[in-house]
Amino acid sequence: MDRQVLALLKPTLMQSVAHHGIGLTEESYGTVVAFFTLFYAIGQLGAGRFVDKVGTRIGYMVIMAVWSLSAMSHALVNSVLELGIARSFLGIGESGNFPAANKTNAEWFPQKERSFSFGIFNCGANVGVILATLLVPIATYRFGWHAAFLVTGFFSASWILMWFFKYHKPAEHPSLSSAELAYINQDPPEKRGTSMPWVKLFGFRQTWAYAIPKFLTDPIWWFYLYWLPGYFSVKFNLSLVGLGLPILIVYNASAIGSIYGGYLPESFIHIGLSAQRARIAAMFLCASLVVPVFLINYLHGDNFGKWAAIGLLSLAAAAHQGWSANLFTTASDMFPRSAVGSVTGIGTMTGAVGGFLLAKFAGHILQISGSYSLLFIIAASVYLISLLINVLLAPGLKKAESVA
Image (cartoon, rainbow, N blue to C red; front, side):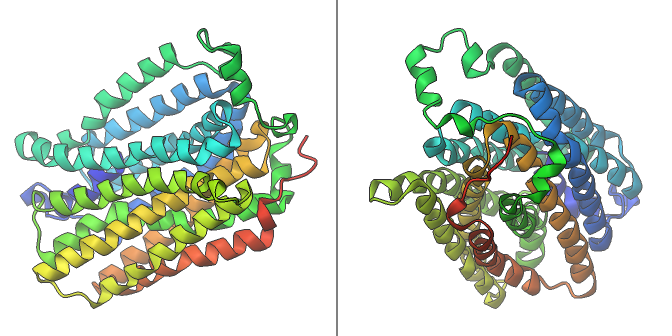
């Protein structure tokens, strides 16, 4: 929600102070997004290790508390500089989310079910976009854009309370049966492993097989989150209210892609593929389905062009989420549970570095040319390149050895 709030308010914030904006430009918007991703990357240096040390129950609560306060602090900003500062703190707060989420997933699900589970809970990001698209225009028109940044506060506070009272690790859960615990722990014991120094993980090819694809593909999702409202606004002359339908369609499609893409490996296993080959096959299919998004460059700004763009972006966003669900779970495929949080943190850090670079590049390109063409060409091509790198570095998702 908090990422989409900024994206939806971009046209409003680009107005002058006299017209209740803060004078944001394409260049400064790109810089604000870039600083968010930079501090998000910096946070990854310790976020995964923090979760591995203190555990998911306490670690996730601390992460969410920092995240929530930083998100609500945006309601206090009155300049581009202040927006950049608030966004930087938000980057630190958000940095622990996926290391904690991936570690939680590894705690509660056997290997064969993790991408499907990830696909389901990753739909929360899509639901957040949908809710923001519905709530931000209402809050902005009734109370001003400052109030729109407060809408996340209620949801995050409720989540923290629910997590504290309801979440336990499987072995500590009061109502989990012994059969259920045995099902969760059905993978070989070596998958659970023991702790190791965080810095040593950089020496494994498997770490880079995970981290480099994150560096290349994570920025594309952030590009969609932060620039799609602006793209539709400029290309098809849509108002804040008019942006609702295109954004809702794209992110509903991405929710479907997240769930079905996560389930794909199980489908391939049912036809005889091994778990590793099924994961790679699912990633290849998702990477291929992203490619047509480059055709958006040939569309015109009429009604047909608008709906064609919605279709292409819906397919690309759905395929990205399916890709993401499977890429995330390759960390737990290749590493023991004790290292999953740290490896995920490394990968998310590299993804944020890529996001920083793309944000600066996107802001600069749009400032000087106003064209999205090169950005969509990049979005179409990086997934197949990423899969090739993954396969070359860790053929068959070979498990990391000597992680102890």
